[in-house]
Image 1 (cartoon, helix red, strand yellow):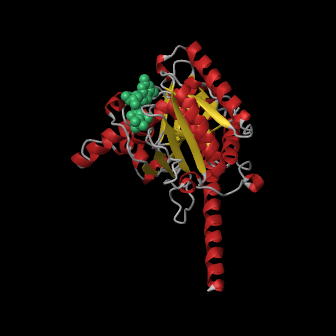
Image 2: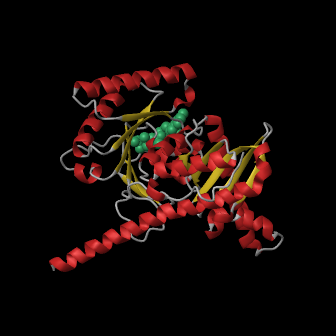
Image 3: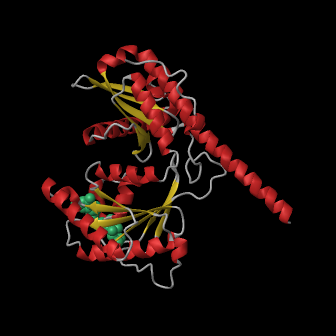
Length: 374
Ligand SMILES: Nc1nc2c(ncn2[C@@H]2O[C@H](COP(=O)(O)OP(=O)(O)OP(=O)(O)O)[C@@H](O)[C@H]2O)c(=O)[nH]1
């Protein structure tokens, strides 16, 4: 049964290493992680980027032109990073490219393989890319997106993943690179799998992940919550979830809720500005505007599902929202759940405030050192 979190959210030594980048509010942010998207031509690299970070409709990607230059984009939200989209035909190991500048930073390399095509050439390129990039930066995370699986049967998807996994790891082992760890994900822009895969990649780049998971576990255990996701509102990427297994249907329904709230917010925000507030009650405005402005932390929405579960959305700050599935019986102690949520929200703020302070302190120390050397 739900119980109070009053004393349980003291951060103590659960704070982990504060390195890496996150938090758009950081005025002193440095070393933002870099996500490199690579793969053969037409494998779907630009489509992935457009669908995940620009909310492009999957069908509209049919009209995307081939990329000829490296496109670097800053993605600014709660998780703040650069995305680099590489043209498929480019040989970035050509001596004219500075491989240190490309692979040398903290981040992840996503290699996209078109699963609807013959993938042997892609595997050769993947092997080449991983071995060379690993030499430049052994700390890169390597992720393989087995992409466009929407046209494959479930059986064939699993078989393809097994085959690609086997061939890649065998080849790396032949080169003495069995230490390189690769993540494999079945993806498509036509369903939520691409968001889920990206979530898992981004989570690897968040140093505070164990702390966030811990906070979510405590919240779930004390509030009768069955599953909780902490979403980045803009990208619909979940940056953390509790440690119970992720069932794809729960993820999809929670992620769709963000979409619905966001869409309604957009429709009514426009109306409010053109109609100059006429015809809309204050209560509706406060519920729907939050995702786009400072008051996001007040956003809240509750949907009763037909299977006796309740889908509950609460804004954490202007970038993050918590979406959870709660058995409707447990919602009787609604007030207590809301109280626990306030404790959770405060703990999240503390985690990232501590990180900001640590960066500020490090910068001050660097400046002092410079003064001495001058
Ligand atoms: N069926 C299916 N088609 C996809 C998917 N993702 C991308 N595509 C299609 O694949 C084609 C190529 O996509 P792009 O994103 O342009 O490929 P790219 O890898 O950026 O290509 P280059 O810029 O030439 O390197 C487009 O017609 C997309 O609509 C997917 O998940 N499923």
